[in-house]
Length: 265
Image 1 (cartoon, one colour):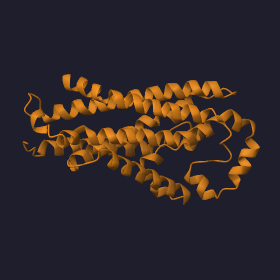
Image 2 (cartoon, one colour; image 1 turned 90 degrees about the vertical axis):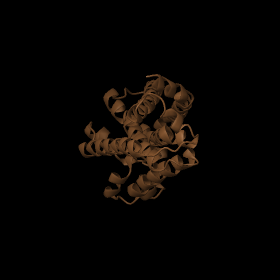
Image 3 (cartoon, helix red, strand yellow; image 1 turned 90 degrees about the horizontal axis):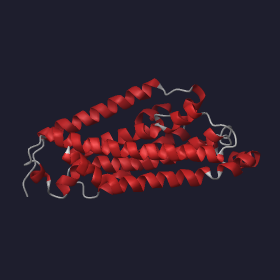
Image 4 (cartoon, rainbow, N blue to C red; image 1 turned 135 degrees about the vertical axis):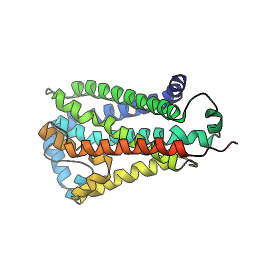
């Protein structure tokens, strides 16, 4: 339990920074919605000038971008990007920082098991991400009420927003697995950015070329806002896929960390 609280304190600053970043991005972006809504026809004509592939790559729908949920869905794609970077960085840092800072052997001399070490660190990371997501969703809800002249469907708004936490869990799990596979990572930030932007670009290309199979390869495409708004539900196959990925990655990290040799320094 002491380790859990220690890790939470360590993550406190980054949690505040990422929460504020996502809130500021959303508030500034949504502040443009009233103007776009008033001049919807002109804005749609501008968008029609872009190739369809470009619009799809950036998640822009001409028919819905002038509605609040349609515009919010476009912005939300970039919020997901921020959330994924935070989660991937946390996941990679959980165990690799002990190796990098040469404190792993000291930590393992304490009266705790390796399972307890991973569990405490992972729990602290999940709490950090949950706090970020809650702050973001609350701020986005307040902004929605402030900028939308028409009532916003609260259920659909939450269903579009909550996946920020789901996507974060996937990247956290993948980062945790990589932190065990690649304990000698020199720069966690560069690896995090490379991995996250790689998945993001794959998602953009898949959208641009209408490659449905690509959706299975990138977490950014698991929770399609247009589908959620249209059906009021998540796609079951991707909920199952997320469960498999998270469980497999976390279980693999636990198993490999149990077997890993930690050399004294």
